[in-house]
Amino acid sequence: MAEKKHRLLIGAAAFLLLLCTFLANVKNIYTSCQIDAEYQVTMAYRLLRGDAMFSKMWEAHQTSAFFLAFFEWIFLKITNSTTGIMVYANAVGFLCKTAVAFTVYGTLRKYIDKRIAFGALLFVLNTYPKDSVLPDFANLQIWFALLLMCCLIAYFLGQGRSIWLFLGAVCLCLEVLAYPSCALVWIPCVVLICMYSRHKKRDVCIFTGVCAVGGGAYLLYFMRGNPGRFLEYIYYIWSGDESHAVGLGERLAFMGQDLLALANDMIYVVLLAMGAVVAAFICRAIHTGGKSLGGFWHVAFSWFVALYIVGYLIGLRVEEAGTKHHFFVLYLVVECVAFLTARYLNPTEKKIFVIGQAIGAGGFVATLILSDLGLFPTLPYLIPNLCVSLLPLTKAFGTGQEGNEESWRRSLWRFFPVMMLCAVMLFRNMVYLNGWMIAPSNFREDSIFGVDWTAQKGPLKGIVNREGTYVADVSYAEWQELIVPGDRVLVISYPTLTPTVYLYQDVEICADSTISTPTYSERLFTYWEENPEKYPNVVVAKCYGGNLMVGEYNEVVEWLTEKFEADEVVDGTFWRYYIHR
Image 1: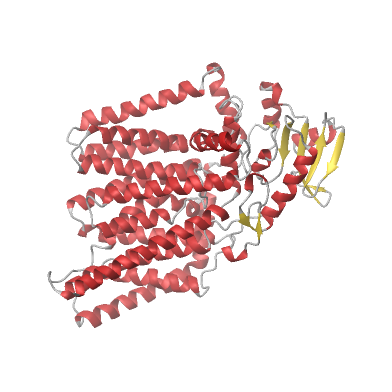
Image 2: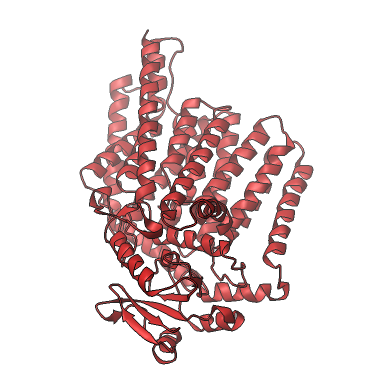
């Protein structure tokens, strides 16, 4: 009876967590809209309008546009409009993420306790690498990494069917499209094949061959039409993307700033760790009279996460600008405890653990190398690692004698750390995640309790947020009045751009890149020389209170104010319109 009752309780808890996760993600569909997400939507839209990749699109992340472009094509075919496309893209992202999460669950439950697999399901559903829901380059990288992990697990632990190795290579190709530096993930994949495959040479050849064919197909597609200029276009893209072209010195400086900021807040982490250790010693004394409890780190980690949640709730850890990424120090704690307790894993579980760690570490390093992110913003890319790290967290606690009620209670207690970790991720997903401003002047993170405006018009229709949605509604109305379909439009806004402004009207996008952190330089003039049909007849410049917000002392601003022959200049609420017809 006791065992049946406990099974009922754990089933009810699992259902409640899954229901809350579903509701939190539905909330995200309507609240998730940050400038990188707008960039992804605009990039995909540009691809659908016929702008050739590389020759007419100089966006740094354009190879990731293929996935969302397919779904945007369906949306545009049905609606013949961009109204509400952001909510639609978020809904697509939620459905894709759900499919990936259940694939992870279905794969893991074949080889490990289904309760741990369920914890991995909840973790995937409640975490995002860049606080955006739609299929952007960050989410695609994680999703394909997780699918690659599942394929390799199925191949190494299943019947060794080559189809899983083939599909794994395809997933790696797609991960590289999402983020090109993820080509580095090929290295840990080959190492894993050499470690676990029964046909090492053959499988390395199969895996590498599929990747090579995929890479060759990419290059042929990208170089079509003008293959001789391909390398030149690559140079234009990377040399002009100043926001992401971060040198080694600057990258080390970012890491130093992260570590310094963590050191300033370390007292919070240290206090939690000390409290967790004391609580673990007390538990050992109470339950065993001073004898070994069978998993000190397991108990200490459980208390750390529990205290972390309490601190979060009572405001000890307020997420403000400059500290919001320190939430992910929890990822580091999980990783450390997982490696300390990995010795308790059986051979099958250890294989799964190593596969997940290798795939996740490869993606983490690839992101750290190529992006402009510091250490803490890159930690969320360890999602594959955390999925398999849940496994050793449940193995360190002794289960006692089998077949009695105490054994059952202890077996349930083993899952307490996983439950607590999923709970804290769910809490953050409910309250904080994706509560970003749509057009922030500085990157603030807000809770859902601060939103007060719903966009009524345009591509952001249905998005709930703060002043950003109001700005979008006002700007959309102005575009309908001042800009006509077919205009060739350049938008200038510095240091950040809300790229979906290009979707307010059926216009020709005349920018070299629609990235949300734009660079205005001589590269734009080179772009017009390469593509003269892209020279604009309308320039829309960010302007508020009569002051242009377009940066200073650059050639494009000089061109706009001195050389662009505007027949009419109109000051709107948030933009100044230079019109030549």
